[in-house]
Length: 95
Image (cartoon, rainbow, N blue to C red; front, side):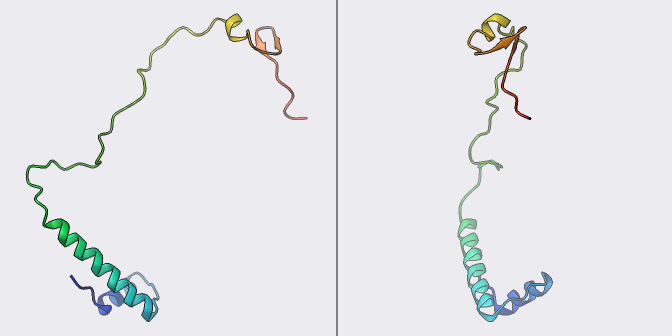
């Protein structure tokens, strides 16, 4: 399908775009190529193929959200370089 310069000018006017003559020519050619390709896609036999929104199947990869016991305090702090009363002590960030 061929898109004419007049059609490009009409769409540009509706979109309030100012196109140079070169841009109009380029848009005409590119839009024509796109429509030609879409015509080619329309030739495919898609009968019996269910419509999809994604080519690749989407599935949830997160684990089930369930409550589990956490580490005991002494085990969580065992590698801490500095600890006080069951908490990590860190260097002051704001002076």
